[in-house]
Amino acid sequence: MGSVLMLLQLVLTFFLFWGLVKNGDAGITSSFIRTEWPSVDIPLDNEVFAVPDGHNAPQQVHITQGDYNGEAVIISWVTPDNPGSSKVQYGVSKAKYDFTAEGTVTNYTFYKYKSGYIHHCLLDGLEYDTKYYYKIGDGDSSREFWFQTPPMINPDAAYKFGIIGDLGQTYNSLSTLEHYMQSEAEAVLFVGDLSYADRYKYNDVGVRWDSWARFVERSAAYQPWMWSAGNHEIEYMPYMGEVLPFKSYLHRYPTPHSASKSSSPLWYAIRRASAHIIVLSSYSPFVKYTPQYIWLYNELEKVNREETPWLIVLMHVPIYNSNEAHFKEGESMRSVFEEWFVRYKVDIIFAGHVHAYERSYRISNIHYNVSTGNCYPVADKFAPVYITVGDGGNQEGLAAKFRDPQPDYSAFREASYGHSTLEIKNRTHAFYQWNRNDDGKQVATDAFVLHNQYWANNLRRRKLKKHHLRSVAGWIATQ
Image (tube, rainbow, N blue to C red; front, side, top):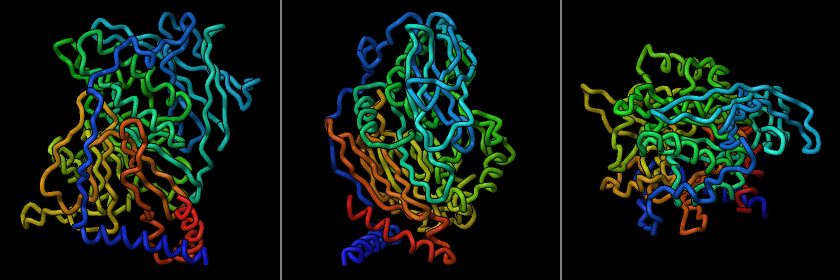
């Protein structure tokens, strides 16, 4: 009897969510208003930016996936005084490091600021689902960390992602980061706008890149953050003589772009557990015949939903947004790529840029025609869910003014700080939730069961879907 009730609960959840998608008139604009901390950056002498002890000790440590399938990581760090060693010692035991990898070192100048020595080291040939310990630095100044590799590529591999955007380095940013670290997520999908160092001038730009990297090290040194670039990474500052876009970002935050045959670190793809993740660049050319356009077409063509059923896209500028801030800025990319997102049944698209939270129904505007006037989004069960998570906590503050009335495509919106998690359970179901940072307490404010576009909508696969219903229903009943 208990299993029947649990299955019924799952079915009711499905019909409730699908009813909201179909009707499009049940959107919620949250009336919650929180007393936020001032949107000013934390002072540089605060302990969250502490420099590690020891001469030339490695700092600003962070890792990201280093290949296409999750069998490698790129470890990055900075030594402030001299290059030191670019070697990484690592192994499955903290008592003994069985392997060594040699990295590269570089530095750059920005105005009169000269960066520390930036190291990048690829650790490849790793075993899946294994905890590795690693050591960087020389002598008494060396430091030790660890990371966990993902499970082998498999359609039913369970995995939990965190989603963070527009983070910055304020006290609100710290609240978001601390709450995220309580979520038990295993990797971060970062949707752009990292340090907000471009809000400063002259040498302080580089100084604030350094402080931000020390700030996020508490998480980014222990689990991969998958990077995407936002407008605050462009740093086009001709008054300082700096006109090369993304200069600081590209020196500091490598991506495994060559593994997916991308010609630029700004757009790339990875596969992790049961997910195929595509990262796009909102501020690079993407119209027809451009490198990003051609690359995305080829990447979508080779997605294998039998192996990685969950297709996730990251971008900085949201395609659907009902906030007054940055309204319609994503329209150009929507007009180019939305038809592809529907055709290839993308499950979910995460964006940032707007400093608030918003989730859409499954809708599309692919029938838009400038001649006939069909120009409003309609319900489309094959379309992605669009989610804006630009609420990390940066010094520009919240985008508190939503457009009124709330459009039919908007399911839930709130101007608060927070982060999201996407917990993939198997090939057919995942659980998503957005967590508001409510005055020092993590609050799950928006949550739903996400049905996989490829498996849930294919009649030939219903038998396999039924096989998973009981386990999913039982999991939901325990939440």
